[in-house]
Image (tube, rainbow, N blue to C red; front, side, top):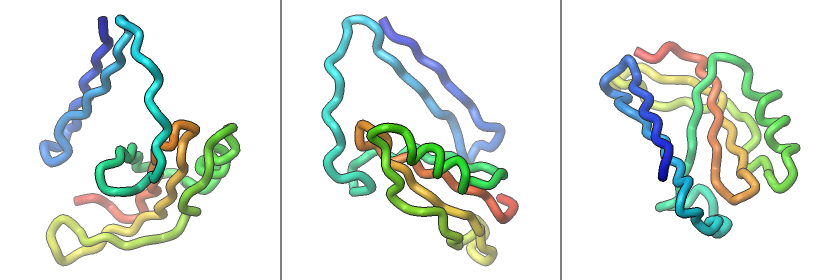
Length: 110
C-alpha cells in the first residue's frame, strides 16, 4: 500500500511535484544523512513571500534539528539571463539529516 499525491504548478517550467508514502509493508527507517547539502543528497526547498527569519528560528528549535545556514540575502540570475532574483535564503537540517531550504522571495519571478 502507498499514498501518492501529485501537485501540478500553474507554470509549465515548474512542472509536477509527487509525494509518496509507503504504508505497507512497513519499511525500516532510513539512515540519518551524514553530510547534508552535498551532491546526491535531497533538499526540500520552499519559497515564501513572508519573512523566513522567524520560521527558520522556530524550525531550528525542533529537537534534533539545526540551523545550517542563517537567513542571508542572495542574488540569483533571472530566467531571462539579464535580470536578477533576490531572495533571503536559509537552510535547516531536520532530525534525520535532510536539508530544508526556506527562501523569501524579494523579487518577482517572471
